[in-house]
Image 1: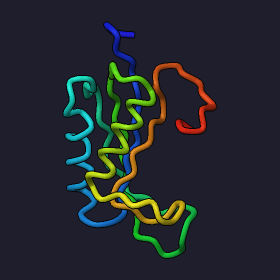
Image 2: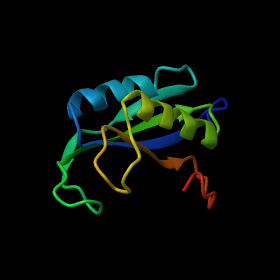
Image 3: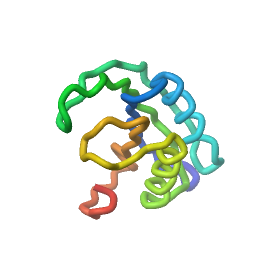
Length: 117
């Protein structure tokens, strides 16, 4: 921990709408509160959709590393609020989406909490 901050890795993906703009805006939204600080940003890569309905548009994906004073559940709530701001709908599992934000790591936490997994 760094002064009450925990390093976390967040994965972002988008395969609907203006994907590049959505990812850029989402990064800004994710690190907007003072409780989340941006450490690193990966390049954006284009990938085929895996699973879910057939013939989905390709995804643009990226990963960011942040440090946060939010708890794992608070960080998840924050990520979902950013998804909702970008009109994320959860109609079809692994379906197309304007924005998907996943917490990949949160410090060295290992959890089987169904909300977090």
